[in-house]
Length: 195
Image (cartoon, rainbow, N blue to C red):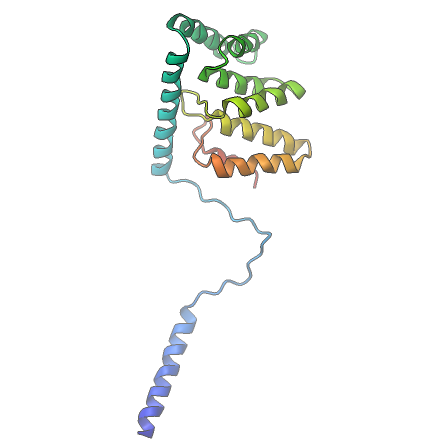
């Protein structure tokens, strides 16, 4: 009986010895070390892109219900003028006209974001805030999110100016509400956040 207990005791010890080395214990976990977000897989990016393009198409279809057919033609011509001569004074005036004449359109959101990218100083901040406050649900036809992109641009602007609190607030909104938003490059906006 004694030998059986000794054997079982040794067996138990052997099992414990075998189990302990297989348990993973991290060295040290630092609360200050940010965890790098994983890059989205190609399949996931494709799914997100299709979903964002669908949202863009839905917003453009909504425009046809909000804007008359004749006005829609004028809206598109004015908007495309800005696309043909990006950043020029004529383009900026065309985008301002889109905002003024068609403020309820999806294209107005795109115009506000372009103006926020193409202007400087207080004017830039005003257009980016407009894009965030009134047009966060707008999309470019390529699936680019106006709300996510405006937050990214304004967040970087605040960060460069040393306003870390406001920048981080916008970056947190992107992580929370725009995790699947993409920019014109097709890359997820959340992957463009500062590390």
